[in-house]
Length: 116
Image 1 (cartoon, rainbow, N blue to C red):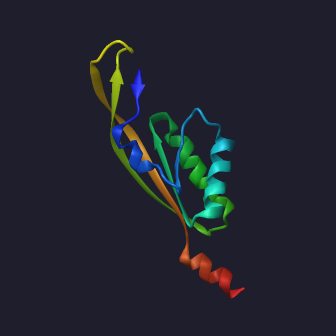
Image 2 (image 1 turned 180 degrees about the vertical axis):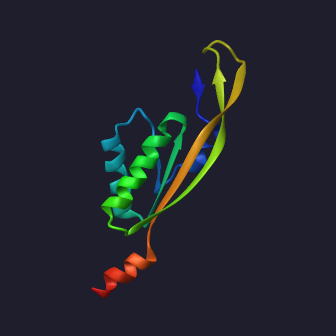
């Protein structure tokens, strides 16, 4: 049984979106668009197999914004904890790749749109 990483709490908040394979790409896009309508920046976070989905979502949002959004990407490794079954108290750990993409509105784009 997989358990969420203990550090996942730092990736939650008003402007954060945890991208998973369980949620459709269109649902992820709708949530991201909703967050960007209310916030000035969006943080996308993904682990393992969801990484390509997060990168594709970020690229799509930047492309649809006509350069108004800028993406800042970092990668890393998160330690995951697995439990063999519900009755077993033994935990095993394993590393998993992670990506964090911060999307924010470009000050250059804001300057350009203010000009007319």
